[in-house]
Amino acid sequence: MEELEIIKLPKHIAIIMDGNGRWAKKRGLPRVMGHKAGMASLKETVRACSDLGVEFLTVYAFSTENWRRPMDEVSFLMNLLVEYMKKEISELHENKVKIKVLGEMEVLPEQTRTEILRALELTKDNTGLQFNIALNYGGRLEILKACKEIAQKAKAGLIDTDKIDETLFAAHLYTGTDLDPDLIIRTSGEKRLSNFLLWQSAYSELVFMDVPWPEFNRQSLLDAIHEYQSRDRRYGALK
Ligand code: FPP
Image 1: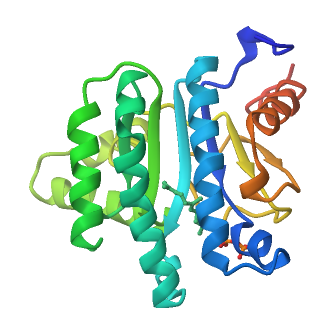
Image 2: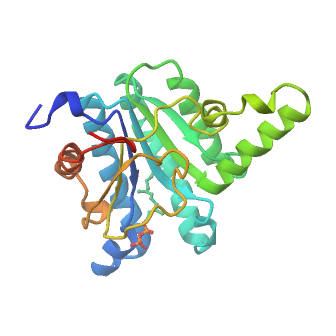
């Protein structure tokens, strides 16, 4: 498996797929063509993670703030998701990929929701790569949602407040019992988390890359993993 250290392979990789709009603009194309090209990068990345034996891949596909974009762009992204599910679902299923959505699905357009629910149902028992799609996702909203659920359970006498610990809290997030991301990659030169996996990123290694998402490929993923493998993870302790 190339030059990677297999024992130090990240179990969970999360990606902020940034730079689609700028990539398109640079080529004199409409912004949405950047998202279209980004879909091909996503396809290659899912395949590479699956081949490498990564356990979880989480991608930031649409944030709770992305609704503020022009309606045309929002619709294009929602349709792109439908297209992705329709085109890719058989191969994903064959490769035992399990799809999960992090975020609020109720407000998504009908067709997008239907297609996603179909993919979730089809792949729910798969045992290969777990592919989390953060969709209508916001990190702060996720934390608030967990707080509300826990408060309601406490009020109903189902939870003893003294027993509220990190494990119980994490179980109320969209990620549930998923492992926290070991590595978070953000493409296109920006160096921030933008409300992505705020709780789960406490000890993640962050790798910022200049490559715009539509140019991200298998080699870019390997480069990011290499960078991750050169880091010294101490989790607040000493060596
Ligand atoms: C950020 O680039 C990217 C997005 C908001 C959308 C990412 C979506 C995809 C790659 C489409 C495929 C996803 C799935 C799950 C099918 P930007 O538009 O903010 O780029 P900019 O910063 O250059 O404007």
